[in-house]
Length: 259
Length: 259
Image (cartoon, rainbow over all chains, first blue to last red; front, side, top):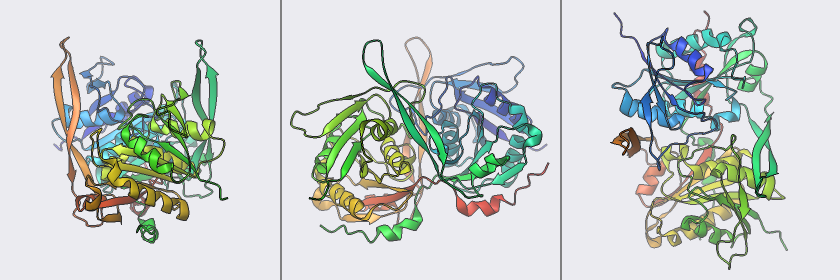
């Protein structure tokens, strides 16, 4: 009998998030599952790691029916991957999947995303990594609609491997299952948040701020993740962690550094 | 008289860090300086932002002799840039410099670095961004040795601009001023941390963990930041925030998604 793949599952919304439970359900059909996920929400944590503080990580049972092992960790999504790979697992996982995030991680959001940082950390450690996100921030989002897509993308990654130095950023549109048109391989759209800062005064008279903002897609391309999502497709962006802008090196070599 | 450039200064080691004070000193020679920096160390915070909590940000005087404005902020380096640009400053800064970090942010460390995330956030907002780091973790590191280089690189960026969609990751070797050989434009070395997890038991009998590790450069290239630093040069890597691995899109289009 062929050995079942070992699948590491994590997220950034925390171990009790419905998106994580949906991802576990799909992964249980594909291999042996180990969950190492944050004990509290860690959205927008980017690639933060815990270096100056202690980490707690304990086995936990969320549902008595579950057959897989789960660990709840006090750290960030990246901490979860590091602890899983270096302490909890006795062999390297065949794949690491993160999500399904409650909310979009398309275009520039990839930079801020704890979900994607977990996948990137896996990639850095030589493990195929995929981050899944649904463009619906609601805790009651309909993850059933996207489970087949999660399965087929993961199956492809297990079968074909993911190109070296790359992880996948998968986003699902907020649509019913029969409304989703298929999967598109995309590039990251050029987009940004136009910030607004909400200034308030606390009961002690001290000013404080809330960050919020409006997402603006500045990219008219039809090969972007934003275009795919707006037009009913699942977007898959290959994300690299060599951040070098190779095409600019020649230009920068014209700078005058003698002084 | 020509208008002086407006320079936003931040870091991730916190507003009292000697590396920040050195950076401010250089920037005061080049333009009008505003400092918005974290009130406590924020190393390894990656691109984390504060969305689910309040932010405090208040004017502070570190040294009575200082002529520039300084603000101390309860958030991450990225929060500092967002608050500065959207709340504190009344015009867009001409450049944002971050650092000088106490410790290396070369090669894969760019991913975890709060210093670099502040520069990247500036880049996303259309502001030229540079992160400076000295390969010396000591609080008493010798920043005098690198001030001339900080100045000449920033002058070049102000004069030539930084290519669109790119920020600069500058690292200095831990050397005396006369031992530094010059500046090299580099690519990010392929390197990683080989983790070790230190498991301990707290006084209440509960296990906890410390993350640590050993940095391993797997890259033999002589055009990398690691090579430059090991050979006595200042490394400058152009860093992009379009993370798309464009060269892999064709390959991924061969995946079979029909089911």
